[in-house]
Every structure is written in C-alpha cells, then in structure tokens.
Amino acid sequence: MPSAVSSHTSTAPTASTAERLSRWVNRHRMWVFAAPAMAFVTVLIVFPLVWTLYLSVTDSAGSVSRAKNFVGAENYTSVLTDTERFWPAVGRTAYFTIGALVLELIFGMLIALLLWKPFKGEKWVRIAVILPLVATPVAIGMMWRLIFDPNIGFANYLLSQIGLGPYPWLASETMALPTLIFVDVWQWTPMVVLILLAGLTSLPEEPHEAAKVDGASGWKQFWWVTLPMLMPTAIAAVLLRAIDALKTFDILYATKGKGGGSFHEVETLNVYAYGLSFDYFDYGTASTVLILFFIIIMLIVALLTTRRKVAS
Image 1 (cartoon, rainbow, N blue to C red):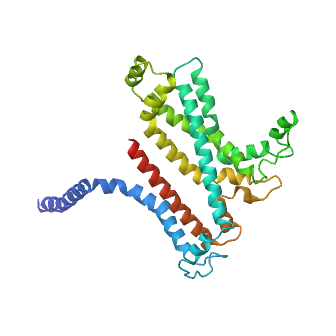
Image 2 (image 1 turned 180 degrees about the vertical axis):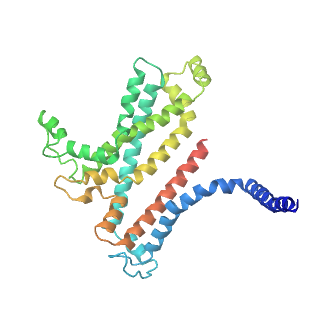
Image 3 (image 1 turned 45 degrees about the horizontal axis):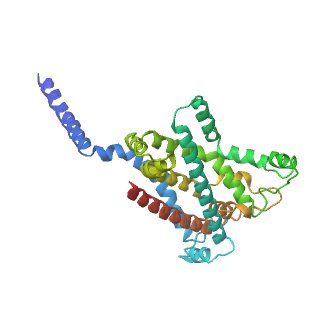
C-alpha cells in the first residue's frame, strides 16, 4: 500500500509539469510555431547580410585566413567615387532592368488579354507560352550563346540568307545588353502572363457588361475598366520581376558577353561584385558593392510597395 501511494505521488509532479508546459506553449504558440522559420531566416538571410556588412568595413582580401583590418567608410568612399566601373555598372543594371521590365509588361499584358477569353486549342497555347519557364537560366543562357555565336550561330545564319550580318550580338558594346534583354524577355514574359491572367480571370463581369451597354469600345473598356481593376495585380507583377531582373546573374554569366568582346559589355552590379570576389579576391570592396546594391533594391521595393497600396 505505501508503495502505491508513493508511486501515485511521484507521477503527480510529472503531470503538473506537462500541464504547465502545455499552457506555456498555448500562450506562446505564435512564437513557438514561428521559431523554425525564424531560425531559417536568421541562418540563411540575416547572418550572410550581417557578415557582408562586416566585410564591407574591412580591408578583407586575398586569403580568407588573412587578418582583416577595420577601415570604416573607406570602401564606400572608394566605390561611390569610382566612375570607371561602379557607376557604369549601375547604369547597365538600370538599363537591363527597365528595358526587360517594360517589354515583359507590354508583351505579358497583350498575351494575357489574348488568353483571357476561351478559344479552341487554348490549353495547348498556354502550355507553349509557359515552356520558356521550364529550363534553368544557365541552360537558357548557354543555348542563346550558341544561337548568337558570331561564327556558327543560327541567328547570323538566318540573317546571311537575306544578305545581312554577321553581327557581334554578345560582343558589341551597343548590342550585348539589348540582346540579353531579349533573352530575359523571352524567358520571363510567361511569368508576367500567368500573374496578369490570374488577375484578369478574377475580375468581376458587371463593370464590363455595363461598359458594353454604354457603348464603350474594346479599347475604352480596357483603359477605363479593365486596367484600373487590374492595376494592383500589375504592380505585383512589376515588383516581382523588378527584383528578379535587378539581381539577374546566371544568364549574364552563362553568355559572358563573349564572341570577341570583353566581359564589360554586360557588367552589371552583380557581375561586377562577382568579379571583385572571385577574380580579384577583393572581398571588402565586393561586399561594399553588394551592400549598396541591397540598399538600392530595398528603396525600389519600398517605392513599388507604396505605389501598390495607393493603387489598391
């Protein structure tokens, strides 16, 4: 009998502890369930960002085991006054991003409008439209590099049949970035199409029917009815593609602007930072470029997010 009582009293604290733990978890369930995600973000995003910020204020270069000396804002001053590499890279980044974004939005809107209404063979057309999204950017970059090769490329072969070319598509300073904008538009316009098409299919029919009753033409219906209602979705598409286009690296690196030219024809901020790190092993300057690039991206995201809230 005493052993039974002893056994009963020994298990009571365990049950009480479990109950207290359960109540604590229930009170803090939001933080408990969010903890794995927060740990993931901290390890894969916050730590690299903080480490890059630390390197940007040091003279880190050469061997990773070399002692790093604190230099303060010296790297930032050097980069911001660099008119030979940094500011031209900023210009190319803006040129590539704006050019690709505008064309993808225009073509994406046109294709989405064409696919909006049901028609015969619609399923196959939609499959064909999204095919460029299937391949990886590096594979696509290598494919287009072969197509635009000045000697054996298919593009120059087609032009030679009508007495034109050959053209240094990826080697010319004036043609390299427009050519790569074309490649980016070819691959990522389907993504814009999918986003805009989803927005179009969710629009109510009543405003369009009312516009038809009032005698509005197709263009006026689009401009005054469809586009204003679609604007929040369009801004979301612009936001996603702007961020992707700003940080484009794989297609640029896969093509490399080769074919007789240097790498500088396509040297955006990402490519410039990569060269500083892995060609010159100047980690401090490369980190400075990346931090400045991160600030630029955050400012653009803040601007587009504000515009989206206004449009909503």
